[in-house]
Image (cartoon, rainbow, N blue to C red; front, side, top):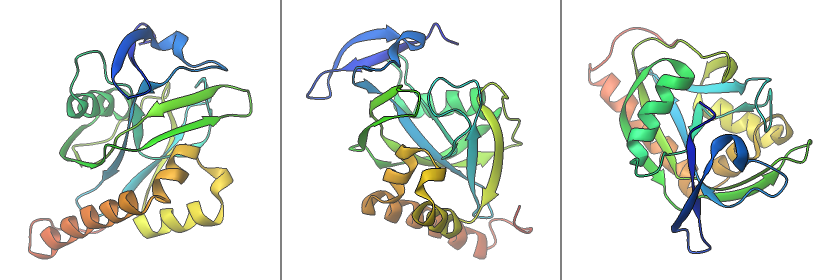
Length: 196
């Protein structure tokens, strides 16, 4: 949906206009609003995805479960649910804001720049996953501690925003707390079965 509008932000992170999504990412990308989400199974695994090779920025790079840009006037939680459907063909629940203060700038090898205020969420998958090949080339359900260890050992193999997020103490702690809550619920008999 390249005709979607992205919300532009001023230096105080307040909305100051919109721009079509297919025009916003250039060598001089303006500051805009986005989000990242880490998706968990009821068994406690987290989804890592590989960006489609057709992506404008960081094609083929492994990253967090899914990302997106809220539409003008769209609540962030609603954007999370919408993008879960678009990218992964699934529904999500237990959407939890881990950080509303995360932002980053990064430029990929082709010169395309990201410049985002990017709140970070965790959520739990509700139903089957059906990846959209235009968005996701591949995916893997992994243990959170294994993903964090891989990012520390080989940061060059992952998206710069995920590397920065997992190296931010508050976000890393929030993900661990979210996982702990899943495992407590599971041990109390909320979910049966093995890990995916």
